[in-house]
Amino acid sequence: MDFFVPSSSNSAQAESVFSSIAQHIAAPSQEKRIHKLQWKHEGEICACEVGESLPEVFRTDEKVLAIFDCGDVFKVCTPSRGAIKFDPIHASKSTLLNVEYFD
Image 1 (cartoon, rainbow, N blue to C red):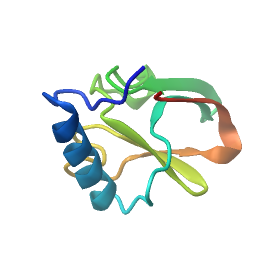
Image 2: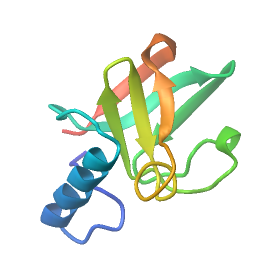
Image 3: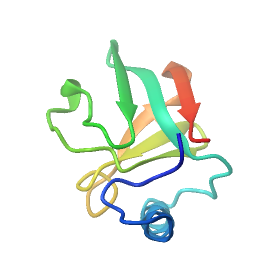
């Protein structure tokens, strides 16, 4: 699947939004863009995908805008978790089950 950011109207806008979110959460440069992520969170298997709603355990149906590889953790960003305000969701690499990248 080609890289995208939900609600972006074209690839230039998607790149701009992705870069803005990365700067906001202090994410390092991303060599590859993450499309899907699966990890264990508080004993439950969680899966998220860019453009889809967060898992129910996070008690919101916000769409995932971007996922960043930030060293020991992945940072999952939604409009109110990482993109505009508050902290992103942290998924520890020690609990990682699967990661899929955009083409």
